[in-house]
Length: 426
Image (cartoon, rainbow, N blue to C red; front, side):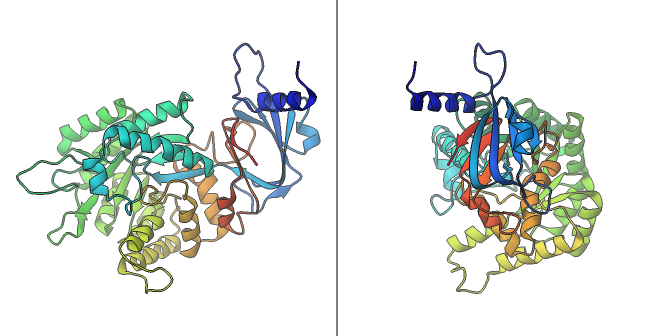
């Protein structure tokens, strides 16, 4: 039927094809043989370990001789196999602000253009080794994030597994874009206030595809344009209660100490940004098990867009405040979430946040864990992803060096498998 080289190629492609091929009774099995395996938990990669994949899941992990029976073997010489990265704060429907300011993206770019960009961003994210991403708001693009998620799940486009929040919730008068007071501008999120409105909008977003509910616990609407709390603690708790009744969690945008305190007392799962967090607030978060996504890379990027010459100029106040808040969170023992607010800076450059987390005081090992098993636990998806274990989804990436001693190794991703399907290989 084929010449020998073509037959070999055909068999390899067949083995690496999506797990269920029409007309077959059994899924193809593939054994990945890297230099070493880091499972997302251990202190270091373990050499001499192979991973057997059957269908979309990991069937076995162990010595090659024990797991490769009857399977096609894919050698990954010199590479470290790790779980796929889990991004905790992304915006696929945004692109870097030095290209187009946020307000112009929300007001001037068509939904078609923004969705087309998101398709490109999703592929770049996956090829960078991010196999799961929590997308925290469509930023004025309605429910396009839910549509992108559906397209990925149906195999229409490549991209990471998505957890989406759709439109997000904001208090009347607090959010942007804004302009002349006599005009009403489209907003980057959905306005909701008070008991009846918050219940209705929360349920409506869930019904339209939200996996999480995002709420803005504070925003820049103080008299001097400073960040101030927006929702009361009771309003926040109501949203948490409604989301929890459907098995969902709430994530809060909060930069002020009071906004963070209210959100924590209300029972949110994670707090994003947290620049103004105090020792007392972070201690409260640690006691309540609320995780912290500091989004270091976003502020770092915006400061550079605004003229900061990183490495030459002193750190601006915004960057210094972020560094201080991360130090307080670490001292309090708060669970740290990997999520850089990517979209403010280029999709596919997700590793920037990991490198900054190390620069801000975490060890490489702790950051690598945060980006895999840690985020899986925080996002409540650890039964399926985050570690390399039998029964988990085969979301796997391969790197040229050990990320537990240098997280920059994640910049060298040369192999990406999601759900048993290979999207990138050396």
